[in-house]
Image (cartoon, rainbow, N blue to C red; front, side, top):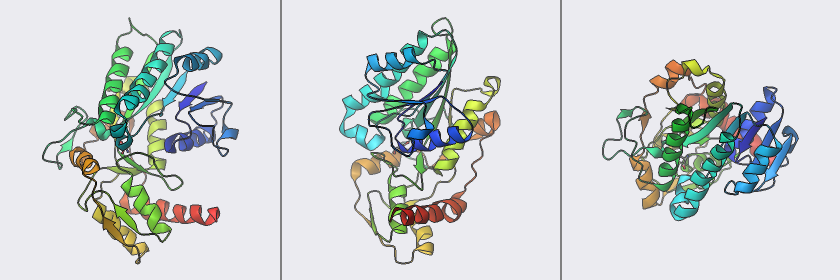
Length: 323
Ligand code: SER
């Protein structure tokens, strides 16, 4: 059986649909809120509750024979800064609750962990094209939480005397832009918010400056990356953790692109220093050699294709069907 945590989130909703389309059955969801009606028919079971609740996690693993986990439940970076202790409990203790249950299993569990480029901290030169082992010195709560979980997952999956059934795989995502949903509590949220506003003929006030730059990708590429990584032969994977990106526009570049489609769109700025400081120390460009060589990472959507063929038509469609 497959367990998805954080099912109602942006990535959870898209992933469950894709797994269902691939013919996967026996999908179980866990979320703190009741499952969205649109997803319900795709699940064989769902649990409402807290990832921090050890007895609930124990119940899920006792009542079901789980052999694949997609662990997506998390507090994102901006929100984590305002509730650091709770963020640690959800992002770290919640993760450990899952590993503890897996340890009690005899059979193998393939585990996907959604990590983030928040694990990096670049002091000055944002333009260095970094590899996975560079600059892993996070200066934000979310990044600390994610890096620690990556390390613990890799540690257990390498030490078979401690845990001989964990196959731990992880991707460090950056900003992800979906046509159907908006993220909550992230620092990269400005891009999806700006795009969704422009399509709805609304102006946008951006909380980071025009030159801000981090990597992005669209949701369909993020989901395909998870599926491809999880379906790759273990022998080919030289690492447990990979980072990936599709394009890396500045705020200004996104604005100019939106202006081509929506000439009346107006962007203003009201910079939030904390959010700006997070964006400023995250990388602008990733060296993706490991992901390309080991499991064939190749995004379908570059910057222009993402806007012209996916985001703008799909978001227009999404809001016209909502009316
Ligand atoms: N999108 C995440 C955030 O902004 C970073 O990976 O928190």
